[in-house]
Length: 334
Image 1: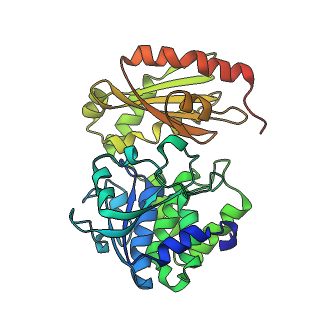
Image 2: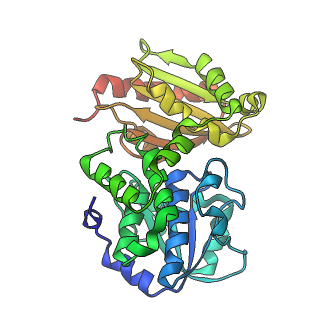
């Protein structure tokens, strides 16, 4: 993909050129796309004269902690002030979790995201949002090149960008995988990204506890409408019984959606007593973004989510009418 495929808005370039100190952040429970964007910029921007630090956990969850260059990135000390904070893969303060107060120490906010924005939550009125981009890391790649940073990119930063791309496209299996997506992947490999290593790390390597969790959750998956709807649940008790981590449950909804015959998959992941993070997946021509928005969330046509609280069975029952209606309506044109 040519850098011109995602032209960087003038307002974004102006804010970057007017800043010297930059704080880099993504949403709580970071993933490869958001965290990969943070690490890539944290490695590339200092080579272009910027002073940077990142928010987020001191010890990132696996496998994010194994991205090359993570240990070289300075962590925000909790007191420094910044000209600019860049939020990657995130456009609302609420999604920053415990890091939200850090915004008060930043003069300006810049949002870079590939998720459709919820206007009432948008922190940056001039946010750079491209909801057709396969990943936020592809936008960041264009940004670094627009700053004349081809030489600043380097193999470690390129690998972080590739991680976000390969995860968000499901290993180049999702509908977002286009010829431009593959060209961009090739550019990152040309810049030194370790494509085989990153793919192995993020898509294929699993701890025994994670395999235990996959088995336990899929064994209890509930199917509706002749197997066209899959309802998964990951309560805290199940995580504990497998000695698994919350982040190791994230891919389960995609695994369920890959089961033959399943057209809609819903996973309730318990993140606190009676509090759930709900992930929705669909196959074309169906969609789940409308259902997510109706419940206060958002996302893409085929992958979306929201948060809720209450009794698990009751919450699943509340979603079923909307899921059945989506099946009956036939979704959107492919």
